[in-house]
Length: 115
Length: 112
Image (cartoon, rainbow over all chains, first blue to last red; front, side):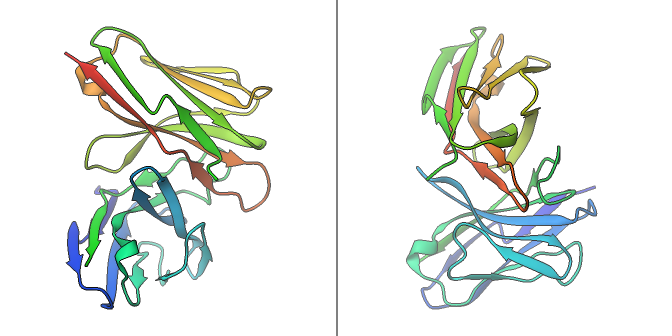
């Protein structure tokens, strides 16, 4: 069982380019999340999905989009990357939408640099 | 602004000593969770404490919650060099559709 995998591990991207970060989980969790982690700011929620076919905006959604075509995959797309999107991106999942006693399981992260 | 804020920002102790980390939050919560992050890795859940609980233990970890003061503490006893990591508190506010909100983290260094 892999848990959550993310790809790529790291990427250097020119500003203005489109980029999709991939996230796959094999735990059959209903809820999935994308966070960005920046020094001094901690983790901030970008988008989330509480079940396949539905998504929602988090704290910092601008410049990002997500889709949830099935239970396992939750890709994050930067339509036109800007340098302020340089960050470490973490995908996470939980059985349900952070309700009750659910805990979140995190992927290993994608380090993205936008030049 | 962050719902949960950890204190101190950084902590350096000697192996074998206890490490105490604190978290304060602003609004009513359903539960509070502590996570650990090793350098270059994703976060790993350590322990969850519900709003109606005051203390929980898990191995060398002890978590307390004081809802009247809106604060929690994480105690790691008999620390080891392998405990060196960043520790985050995360709060789940009460109310429908609430999501976990993470603090900025505490960097713990345990010197061998």
